[in-house]
Image 1 (cartoon, rainbow, N blue to C red):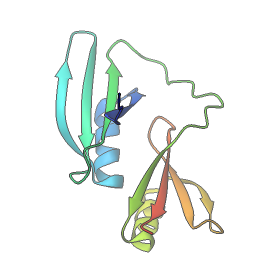
Image 2: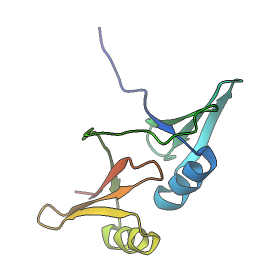
Image 3: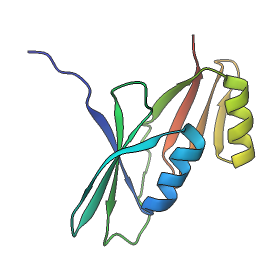
Image 4: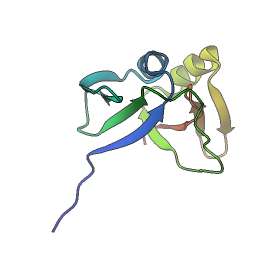
Amino acid sequence: MKFTFAHNNLNVLDLEKSLAFYKEALGLAEARRKETDAFTLVYLSDGVTPHQLELTWLKDRTAPYDLGDNEIHLAFKVDDYAAAHEKHAAMGCICYENPAMGIYFISDPDGYWLEIVPMR
């Protein structure tokens, strides 16, 4: 028996705001979508790897998600770390930097942290 990654899911409060953020900040594009009366699922792709990010929008949700002390994050490799850092600084979405490790984190509109690491 073998398991392989399919996707990760994040629940979002404002789907359009999140889609715009992920496109601008990380270049992710919508690969597919599932609509129901209660929710919308949008799968984002980097166009290179088979892994996808699923954004779930619960249509009746009005309150921001309480992420508590959840230390979970997604990590993205980038080929031009300096340019990525400059872009994210201009967007105002860098929430934590660790220069000693050569990484930083950005925060999406719902407060999820996304780690940015250089290609190594």
